[in-house]
Length: 402
Image (cartoon, rainbow, N blue to C red; front, side, top):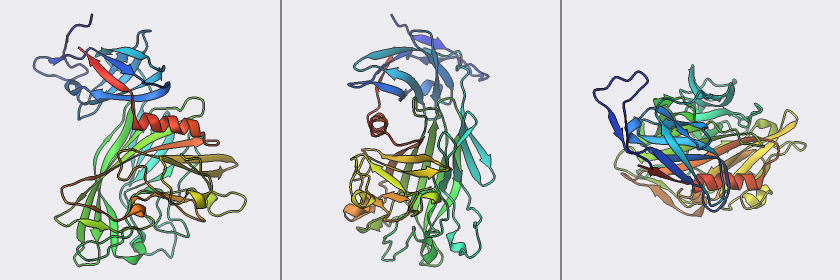
């Protein structure tokens, strides 16, 4: 029988008295299917910012990472179909596990696990990579480079054909703001831009590492420029290995809010929103074409364009082997499953809710978008990507025990 646990905060924290937590264990139920290496989350506000452990019935201790908001996250190696596992809270400290590290490298943040770089975030604007590019194209606030577990590059930056494409980034194209038409996607026109503003937080940990950053969308059609949106990115890279086919997995949550009392109107258009630019080695080359695959089993780029899908894979040959990344959309996203823009010739895809009609971001109503990214070596496995999407969309139920 579980008993109430009275514990003092350990690890160098000096507090008057103790912290009472009624949570002494958790029960995790995987539901109607088997799960492997699954992320689990529950509230544990008594231990904000701490790293603890959960002990399985066989004595295995799993890291339990609690963020500054009191949300605790851990990874269960396996959950059997229609079965539960019980894990006891252990406050004596985390097991000695490898960590996801977030480190500052000049104008970038580097995210790595077990000595492998998974991705880098371009904070302040990067230098232009070659002569002849207008200064209008300088920007920060995007992810590039992004790698597979074998170190294969799967994104591109400042590509020759579309200089305004930047790895993983989030602009809007066809937009109306106070009767003007700023374009935050085609930056070369000089009507709109997206700037990195600041880093709110960075962290490392045995379960996840990441950062929270602020971006600003500006209308350049007026002088002085006028702020349109404020965007917060929260990126979490997880210490998941992917099992039989190694994978890196990270989440991106974008929260966009109006900077003032005016809405951003987004008329129907074929692209806009989250974009992903693939490795330039896949750039319309006959012997190394871009490979696409959607959750609906569509692999032809012409047929995939303007379809709705839970996820879409983008890949090709990198240094002689297949590599790529899949982008998974959360079911709570606007118009999910969101329609996809697939470029007819180049390695580019875009989740584009504007395709299905006019939309708007209204004052005091945050526009929240959640995506999970999976980078992998070898050919994509539809069943495996479907399983990862299910874990993202319908995480296992975690019940606390007092």
